[in-house]
Picture 1 (tube, rainbow, N blue to C red):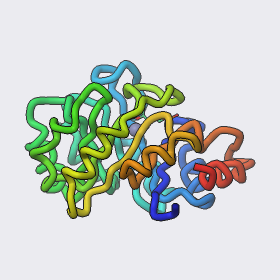
Picture 2 (cartoon, rainbow, N blue to C red):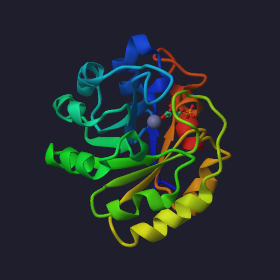
Picture 3 (cartoon, rainbow, N blue to C red):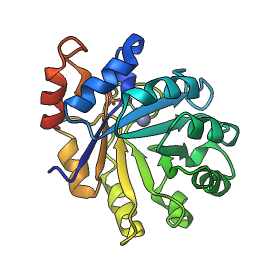
Picture 4 (cartoon, helix red, strand yellow):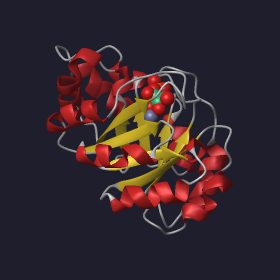
Length: 217
Ligand code: DX5
Ligand code: ZN
């Protein structure tokens, strides 16, 4: 179903070649590029920050979808806006003032997303539906690629009801592959992040497997 967007996560790309990797997956049919920012504090892993986002921006023609797994968020919002993020997603668990954070993200000219860890109920974002453009449902505990999918279909359905007719995306992040993608799409998701399932078997020199992988999701 091509109304579903596929957002490859560069967490599974060659870190020495982000520009070429982003261009390769876009040429192979990726809809958005998903950029996982980790701080070694909110999650037990460290990736990269706004400078890396700014460096890859000229290599991306479509949406740069930045997933912040950091706490605090607010001091870095302007830096990600400057870096060219189109969507900036913060975790509802990352601090006591998610409402302020989402206002600041929109105020900086970006689309605002809110992410929920697997242990967080849909009700945690019930008051935020008019403040977000995207809700990201984590189907793994964030921090690493290549983990096993955790079934969150009931949460996805609850969020779909909560969203109603608002133009809010439901994004799924973690363990998305050709087996799990149909389950989350059926439950109401429309943006599927996939890291290992997109990048496996290919490279910048041999990008055709990326396209095959994207079409199989
Ligand atoms: C997990 C990240 C995900 C991850 C997905 O903390 O937010 O975006 O890269 O990787 P896969 O698709 O391999 O589960
Ligand atoms: Zn992510």
